[in-house]
Length: 134
Image (cartoon, rainbow, N blue to C red; front, side, top):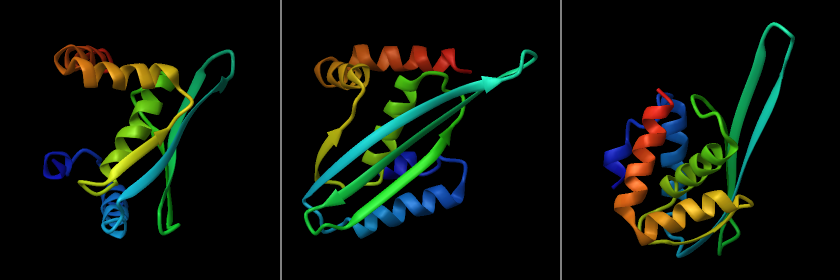
């Protein structure tokens, strides 16, 4: 699974950091992940600026803590940023570990629930969202 997404992030530093976190968590069985996103809009009467961010905080049973934060580009909703935070956190955890994800976004929970119940329908919706952003 991980090889499929190796070039998902443009920034090599981000890729290296996520891979490093996954290696550091390799012996973890249970991992708790807290995600969050933010959307800040501001600007002048001539231009509106939107800045989106996402981040997460991970800790395991050995009380090792890791965190990640970043700017989200080409995603113009807090729900998409929250889902992106979840995606990045899952990517940064080792295969076979048990994840417990805490989020304050009911829409993100609903989207993930749909994906687990009906992956084909969720995939189609994800394609629509993907094409909408480009």
